[in-house]
Length: 219
Length: 339
Image 1: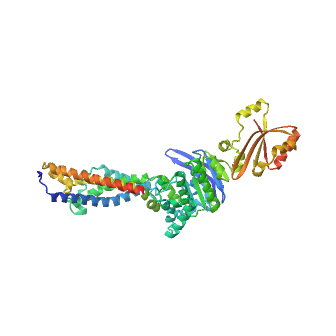
Image 2: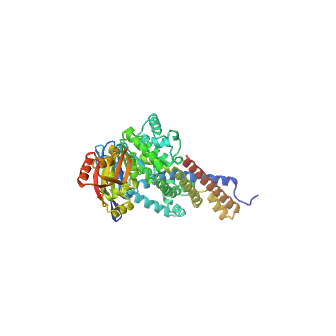
């Protein structure tokens, strides 16, 4: 019916690869990114555990990594990737740069979300004699929860974009199909269907994020 | 209960220093409802935050219930804070949690059992009249209701002191009244010492027994509310008192008297039962003086009456002197004022 060189199986595999790469790097990136985000919020000058030196150092590191476009970052850290996963080619190899790319991004998003929680809430917590850990656990995180969900949706969408570039290092995924078949072999069907799938992914994630955030905030 | 001694507070801002408090001394006794009034920027917010050490003084001592706060370990300080409840102008409730959870929060932090928490929260919600709102969220409540939640939350750990930071400034007059009534009940029923800051003299008038007036980082006048309302010494205090008690003679009356060559009036200030004495009759019959009441004002303060009268007294000088010393003996404060 369509003039195309790719099979359905290839497509499904590619979708699986994309989900795998996004899922793994999102999971690990969220863990590190959230921790980093919390640290830069509490260590800032007026933070609840003010430690400006740590804040400044982390701030600079985050900025440096975020300055490097993903496609360059991926190539630049090949030696590191190879030392961690043993190879610089393939889906697993793509996850390393994806994590390094998304962690500082999530840290920034988390930072923004947490800073949205007004100083009044923190003041109320301190007036109750809450420990810094309790302030984060019982006050800041629950109040920022809706915003954090939206941040995570943004991060996920950003990751999907990055995985499309992971094709460059043989990472696979739907982006890879678009480049290898759609672009390099003039397979219009492959190109269009890839784009449609990416659009569907993004729509799904954003609306899920919106719904969850609204639900959390309404409660 | 609360003692502030020689407090200075300096904020470092980039290149400049902001001297927020300049040598403040203050003592709040157990059971007081102590009001601090001042215009914005006078330093009252900083002052109230010293008491639970949300702010640390640059110089001076904060002593709460015998404990010097500066000498406490972070842990000991947190324990002291649990003895001091605080409510805020903008309530500072957790929007993501129910009213029940909001009130329970200090108890959760103190790691109380679920059963204990339930009993205490139910009691508190009953006390503030919000028992039916336990499962609601703050966004579903009115401002007055939110402040009631704030009060319930502040009382959760059975504190000895309640700090109120402009607690009624975001509320309409009627709601303000109901919150003030509630604060009075907190003071009477639980015996909690209250320190409140406000820029509204009517708040002081309604519930405080003592007041301090602040201006530019200093306390310019302090004393019992009746004293300060009766004869404010400082111009700023007078301005505040004027907002609720009209003690100044209106301009038109002054002009009229001056035209009639009256330049000196006798100001009487009477408190409580003295305010209901038949003063005019006594002056006229017993001392045979001609008396006209030029201007009078009666104000309810702390369940008692403060009456201020400006009299134009004519008659023999000796009779007048006798009359005034008689009044003073009756507990009336007498003052000659030129107009």
